[in-house]
Length: 200
Image (tube, rainbow, N blue to C red; front, side, top):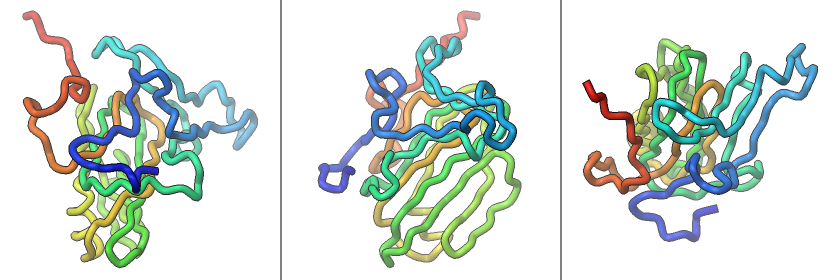
């Protein structure tokens, strides 16, 4: 999707305030009756978040495995993003939550990294690494150093990201890639998460 795009600085794949925030994504929720599910319990929708006075994308489900968004929307396509840092601005809903990144390394092998807040230990298997993720209450900025994880997990070098999948349960403000870690004062205004200033 982005392989022929000039990539530097910031590359956003989801911004909750855009006209069509999920334009680059496909959304998956359980069908009515699937696994004894009441589909009303699971949803992916745009909601207003009071804490940051902004609309955000909310993914909620009792079973996080069958409620998710994935980018690119077509299973055969790949992102082709070479920027090595993935940043997610997500809200902790105090429920199970996970996300997965699929990358290519310099040996042309596909590697997957799955982070979740319900796993206690990191497990490195040949094609997937699963790892724990600690979330603070409220809004979090998760910075994922893809080059570092590929090197530590597999002893190879990161080439590009092919897919990003976000499972329930969370709220999302933005998901983007960068070429390096930026300080708060270097971020463009629309990449910052404006939290209310405590007047007391």
